[in-house]
Image (cartoon, rainbow, N blue to C red; front, top):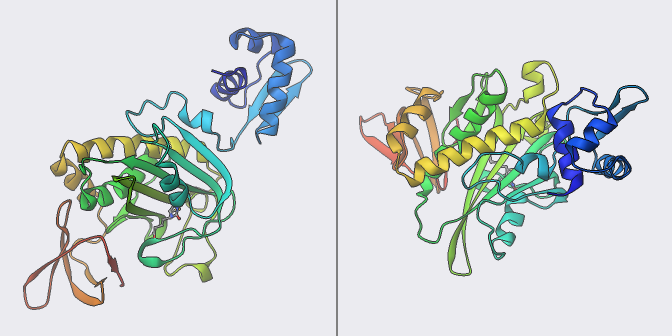
Length: 321
Ligand code: BTN
């Protein structure tokens, strides 16, 4: 590991608390003079480092998104072995797909501060205020086609809700197929896309979370919220990214291991739509009925006015009211 990353990790472990330069140099297995260079470069990476003549140095929060701090001791099996953070891209989903040609790309995580052409489901746009949200894509190379699209789509939304709840005191609800809501307003959207690249099925799970700012009302179709408005303070995006990646890793493993009963149970315990009357646009058809179930293999199950059950797949469908 590079000295800069080691120093940054040590500072992050004692976030907001000072450490003497000598002590930090020893812990990072470097000299005091090399440490000074490392601290300068850490500052240039966008981190706020404060010096005190008597107490040494400390890292101030909230900490900027940083590939090393995300990868470090993440404890996941598959997701997040490699993380890349960009300042600005068209869409993190596109960058993730473009990376699929590289060796060892499975589990890659792509983050950006800004997206010029962020995509939402059903051809909608996704807008996140610059530097305030999480705009993230995870690449999964799935040559044997083991990741069932329907199950992965709902598992991804559940993972985001679970990851957020791990790091913040929240009670998230899920709206099919994978919106995460707080008090009825949209906090997070997930876009699962699949492409064949070099003869292999590549799946990208794109996640947009409104953390310290929500998009302006004229840029969204439905009421939106963000974590900081809900909690009343600024939220550390780094902690949120790590929480979501950990939960996504577990959910992806669950889908591969066909733990669909558990997925169903966990999803339904957060489902904010049971028995509600909804209308769903699926392709060019509109279906209306009461929500009976959300099935990991069969999608949304509605009971229509004539008492018939309708099964709607997540792909190509969207709730319109
Ligand atoms: C939706 O609710 O419509 C899904 C929104 C998904 C947005 C994320 S932001 C990161 C990733 N890159 C994109 O272009 N879209 C997804």
